[in-house]
Image 1 (cartoon, helix red, strand yellow):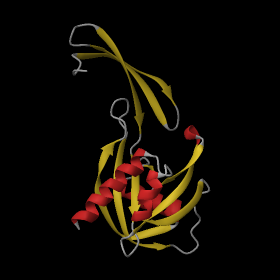
Image 2 (cartoon, rainbow, N blue to C red):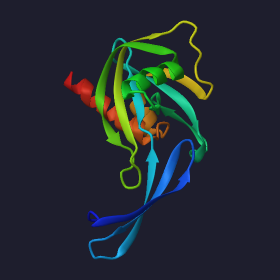
Image 3 (cartoon, helix red, strand yellow):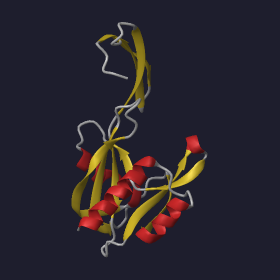
Length: 180
């Protein structure tokens, strides 16, 4: 698809607390009308929380309704209004694992599905992590554990880790570790 000549209309056709779908009508380069649907979703963060020896990463187990199965993932979540991605990363890591980190570093960002969505994912590295005493873990989390990077590769091969954001973030983490 080439860049359209002109947008004619834009209308929200579905909206809920998590996302909205917009229908755009536009003029194509051949002067014919076209339609495009865009899913607008708030940005999210995903956190690679490393153990002190930098050989293990914190994983959580979540039930994923659309897949009808559990999936091992990195801690992640939506960036709330009036919140920076880093603030969201700190909040999500604590809510999902009870962990706090002394060192934070951005590992980059990506678009989750640029063919139909504008959702952006921010990847953070959290180091010098410690469990906060008395932390209450989010009820939605079915399990958590620190996994060695070697074992994590096996979990990916065994299809225990399926989500693109986690796979992308783990690749960015590996690239970072290889350089440092």
